[in-house]
Image 1 (cartoon, rainbow, N blue to C red):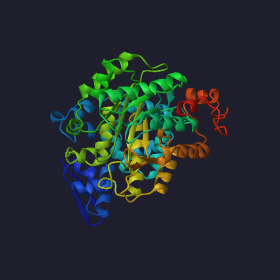
Image 2 (image 1 turned 45 degrees about the vertical axis):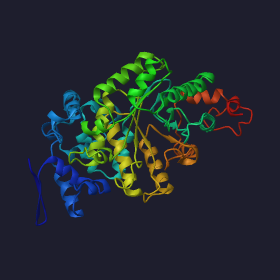
Image 3 (image 1 turned 135 degrees about the vertical axis):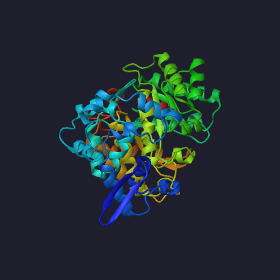
Image 4 (image 1 turned 90 degrees about the vertical axis):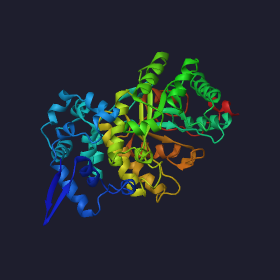
Length: 458
């Protein structure tokens, strides 16, 4: 079905909904690389005007990627909640944006709506929104998850403590873990990206983190970010696994490039649940995503990278994760060229995920060859804190010495806590107080010279 709009004396024709969505996307290098971006600012505006008049129901009738050939499309279609969708089913994309900005779109209303929002609907409306719209609407969305602590509660922001090491050195990892804990980080997860895929080493890393958490009775969870099938094998061998991790994408072909299917993810979740290691909840999955992954795998089917990213959240939503993280600038400038594109993408991803009922965090990051710097990350960090992001990354010095990219530091989370008055996960905050790391208001106490944690690296 073709979509047309006349702007001034020019009549614009978009051959199908997939093309219209791509042309309406704010500029980014990945879509230009794929040859699907608008050819001019005029075409981009025309596409937005045309998209605004598309009924939301159209996304239920016209699949951007065929139902018959893509299991992610089948998941989206087969799990759509028509009853949840009913309150907005009569709206166009433009009217949906107006509704999201209105007082009618309360936190409770958005929570009830989430199962009825398809990723294509979320992506479409985001294309019509300014940055401030993305912040306001996302802030009204609340997604709370639990394992050993509660993440996403009002007025809180958690931090993943990321103690990566280029040689998986246990002393180096432990030092980073202790450093992060003493800065009040780690309530989202203590998660290691291992340099090795040796199962014996991965098992030892899992035991290392489990030992620290158990010894000090820390109400948090650990994760060694390896392939889901490897984690299943570790669980079968009796290794203490808290969260099951996997990178996911928004098309079947892109997920196949990661070596996964929806059925494999189901097996991973079942394996994680079988251990019953959660104390306050059973959200056992941890997913990471990023705009450009489908394009880099030549698996985007002509769909713009932001819509592909939103489709990844449908995959995540199916498995009731504790954490979902858009690693927004990690893939590189071929997909998000500069700080402006990274900032916009981070706000889009967070909004789309939250609107769909996904517990969104963000790795606020960039690669060293991107046209971005730490000031850009400060901007995105501040905007996401205003938007109610569930969690961010905490990395020593903001410089990941194993993955070789720039992110946010242990110090950065202190900045947003002070500016926005954000607390940590409540169970973790109480532990910091008992451990003598923070006071009753959550502020770090000065110096920790005698704290028992330091004995681990003495």
